[in-house]
Length: 286
Picture (cartoon, helix red, strand yellow):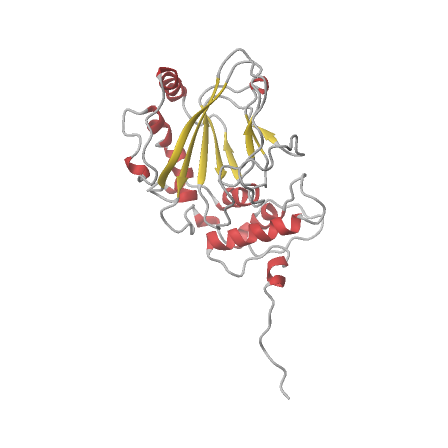
């Protein structure tokens, strides 16, 4: 179990629920980054059968294991998928020097309607400047359920984020988020390591919930023009690529996931989910 100080807080969890990712820049030390790059260039990293307990993967002296066991990294993983998730798969993604095209936008699985979510961790062991491409992701796309490459023909969404970063940076993604590898226009190989993990416990209040109270704004309604940084405000924020009106459905989906993660069946944003649930059974007396 991770020390509480290394777990995510409620605002970070709300950000993950709303946008489908969290970003942590430069948190892996240089000595681990160099060891990982040496392992990549020497031939790769050993894999494991799908379903293997995470605690049985990457024993010492694995450089990937050293990265994943860093207190901050293990705290992030535990906050999202619990203390001993299951290994799903991993991959060393490479983008060739001066390659001719980018990867198409996609999701990493067939249509998946679970509230439970798998976690994908992407680790960048070397600096990734803009001309090297980087992983591109579309914030807030994780509730738009797609089947793998069916959005590959679309490019350049308003608000998309290229992972331009320093060595040792990490992305953690909801399994449904739309993403792709961008074109590498440099003379160097670009590497990214990805691992997918499945939860083995119910994803209920796994993070540091000390701040999960009225001070986070969990039950305070949002008013027009009001600026706040609490849970309600984070879950109510629209992404710039959302179509007019469609953002309401995104907020309903965020509300459902937040209820699932907190166990609070009365939580709502803007009253929109409560309105849908209003089906009175009481009858007027004669």
